[in-house]
Length: 309
Image (cartoon, rainbow, N blue to C red; front, side):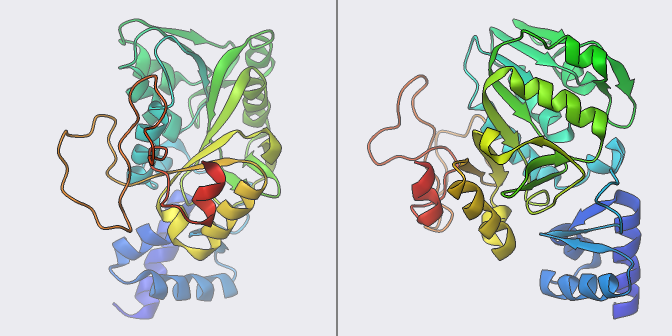
């Protein structure tokens, strides 16, 4: 494929989705990420798109949000891995809040297997995923339906959260930086997200590598308000996003890496892995890790991993 054809296809993908990762672009145009990065730089120089850490967005992407159908196809494998690992942070009998988003929707599908939960949400998609779960109580906020992401927003949603107290909040967004924290592109969504996290003792951000380094219009959670970040292994593999993880860890955020292919219920016997990709198994339910073990998905004992033990 000639460079002009390749760049036209890249531009069409970004226009259709609002934001696309370099990895996904490379897969579609069937070339390397190095070549795609060069193409993205060329398109940015022409003012046709903007670069973000690990991806590309439309010009003005600072305020533009892709719709739900487009977001479901972005970093789908990464979101699944993040949801698998995040579900392991929830215990039987917990009361949690789960915000709107495609990653939190994936999490909700896994929470349906945990008995005794109470889940508070403003997301119709999260509620739908839990609708037929045995012994999971779903509490929905009030508010006005925002059709682009099937979330309830506005003063009704915020007022219904007053006085609420839960153990954990699971929340996503459009961008995450160490300097500004979690942000989103819509003012109403940001206000509800702030109310959701204020009710929780622990705030857990679910963000794939395409969100790292992106700074969007409305701040939802400042960096010092984030307890833990669950992201995918691509975030630690690329220099810009790996540096962002280091900065977040310096700010006190616990970093947990979800390896691709991780499942909530791994088989009893797995083929041996290389040292670079080896991960520990989950600790016994309700117990501390055994000597020498690390958190699920935690990186090997590098500078970054040592911070979060």
